[in-house]
Amino acid sequence: MSVDLIVNALVTGAAAGASATASTAVVDAYAGVKQGVRRLFHRAAEAGAVASEPNEVVDELLARLEADQEASREAVAEDLSSLLAVLEVDKDPDLVAAARRVVELTSADVRVGKYHIEMRDNTGVQVGDHNEMTLNIDPPHRRQP
Image (cartoon, rainbow, N blue to C red; front, side):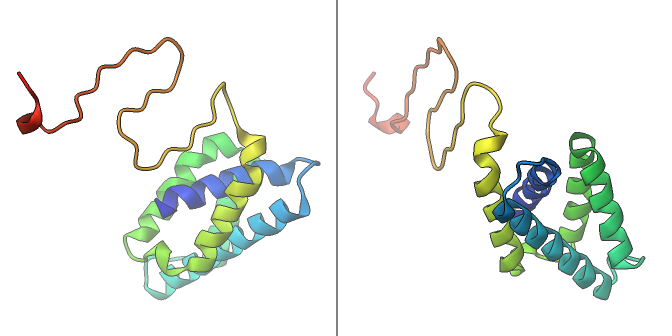
């Protein structure tokens, strides 16, 4: 989950940072995410997971992302996922907190579509118009024939 959060923060932060209306808080939070990713790549280099200079790898990754956010989402996710094989991103609470902050700050601007949904620990949820659903949530042994 943290990888998805960080990738989302990088993509939305890059998009928000490129706009002229980005607030200072968004720019600062995005800078924190970039710094955290840089730390992550340095730790990976120390562990031998990154063969080249970590700053060059991060600079190239961020340049790709900031040039074209949509095309780079998959590449960023892949690069970060490969690092997680060696390192646990959850061990960097500053990076996770900065990523959450970017997503929180940009969530009002990034909403796409008709609905904005946040769900946690839900059962039998549908999103959309004109849905029909039949739920049998009771365990089978409690149901009456």
